[in-house]
Length: 357
Ligand SMILES: Nc1nc2c(ncn2[C@@H]2O[C@H](COP(=O)(O)OP(=O)(O)OP(=O)(O)O)[C@@H](O)[C@H]2O)c(=O)[nH]1
Ligand SMILES: [Mg+2]
Ligand SMILES: [Zn+2]
Image (cartoon, rainbow, N blue to C red; front, side, top):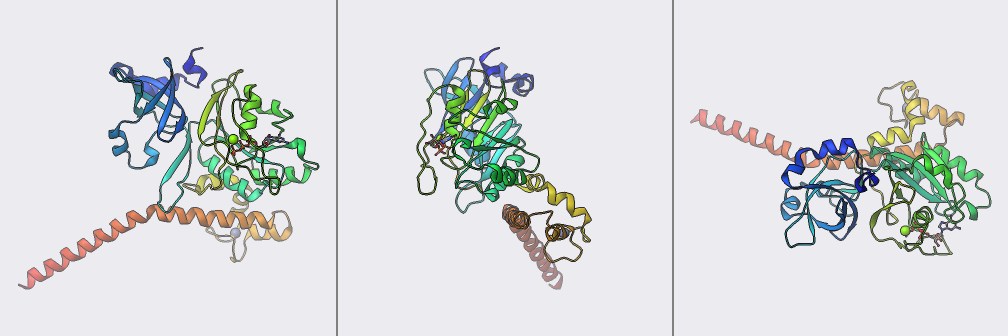
C-alpha cells in the first residue's frame, strides 16, 4: 500500500482527481492547519502548503477554503518550498458549525471524516443536552457518530451515566473507555481501521489527546490536568491535526470546543431525536410542534413516562435554534427579493406616470 492509501486515498478519490495529473497537479491530503498555513501529505511526503490569492478571493465564504481532512490537487512552485493548493476535491462529509461571532458564516471543522467520536468524560463534564447538540452536528456532517464516555477508571458508578448517554445517543453506538488504562479500547477497532478517518470532538479536558497518544503508542501530544474544582480542561490542544496510527487508521485531534452553534442541523436533529420523530406521525396535526397542540402524541408519551420531558425540551430548544439560524442564512435572499419588488413597483409607477403625460 502506498502512502496515499495509508491516508485514505481510494479509487473514488482517484476518479475525483481525474485529469488534474495532466495539468501538473498531484493529489495530497491536508493533515494540519495552523493560522492559515497548511501541512499536506502526498507521494512526496509532508510539505507546507498555502492557498493562492485567487482561491481566497473566489471562495464565496470560508467553507470554500481548504479544511483539515480535505483531499486537494496541489502544485509545486519552482524554487519554493511551499506548495500551492489549486483545487479541493468534492467533500464526502463535512463537519461544520456556525463560525464564532455575529456573521452568518460556516466554519468547516474537518472534511472527509468517516466517523466522529463525540467524547465526554464520566464526571462533571457529562451533559446529555450538550451531547445531543454535538451528535446532531456530527450526524449532519454525513459521518457516523459514536458517543465515547471516557475516564471510566475514575468513575465509581457509571450505570446512570450510561443510561442517560444511550438515550441522548439515539441510534449512535455508546462506548465507555479509559484512555488512561486502555479499558474498552478494543471496541473502537470497529471504526478505527486502515484507510478510515476518525475525528475526535468534545470539551477541553475530556481526554481526546490522551486517547490519540494511547492509540499511537507514544506521548507525542501534549495533555494537561483538568481543574480540580470543576473538571474543566485548559485548552491544551490548539490546532487540528490528523495522525496515522501504527496499526493503520487516521485520527483527528481537535482543540476542545466550547461552542458548537448550528450551521445546518435539520437532518441531524431528525436522527438525534428519532424517538420523537417516530411519535410525530401519531400527532393530530401534521405540522404539530409538540407544544400546546391538542392530540399531541409526543406530549402524551411524556405524560405516560415513556419519553423524558428533558428530551422534548432539548428537542424544542435545538429545533428553535436550527430554524433561527436557517432564517438568518436566508435573510440576504429576502432582502434582494424585497429590492426586486421595489424595483418592479417603481417601474410600474413610472409607466403609469408616463401614460398620464
Ligand atoms: N483518570 C483518567 N484521566 C484521564 C483519562 N483520559 C485523560 N485523562 C486526563 O485528563 C486530562 C486532560 O486530558 P487531555 O487529553 O489533555 O484532554 P483533551 O480533551 O485533549 O483537552 P484539550 O486539548 O484541552 O481539548 C489529563 O490530565 C489526562 O491525563 C482517563 O481515561 N482517565
Ligand atoms: Mg487535547
Ligand atoms: Zn405533537
